[in-house]
Amino acid sequence: MTDDSARTGFDANAAMAGLDGWRINDTGALEKSFKFKDFSNAFAFMTQVALLAEKAGHHPDWSNSYNRVEITLKTHDKGRVTQKDIDLATAIDGL
Image 1 (tube, rainbow, N blue to C red):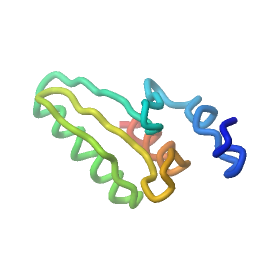
Image 2 (cartoon, helix red, strand yellow; image 1 turned 45 degrees about the horizontal axis):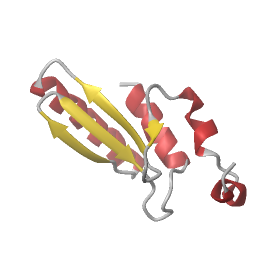
Image 3 (cartoon, rainbow, N blue to C red; image 1 turned 180 degrees about the horizontal axis):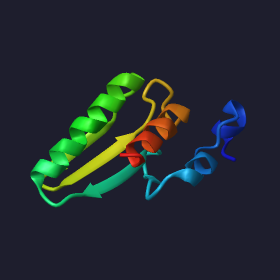
């Protein structure tokens, strides 16, 4: 456990156990890259993620280039990955 996880009782690495292909990047955010057949499929995916994020009240940082979508999750007001990020990543994996 990191000092932060000891203080909060939340261990992001342990919480990630059920996620598929997500990793903690150099800035401490959860991230994953998605590749699709084409731009239309990538954009359709982004639309689905946008609806999930809006419902959760928790919004990703992301980018799109043709058939790729990069998603980064971090609870900005906490400055770290929280259960909100794990929950949204799990929902995204469910798509």
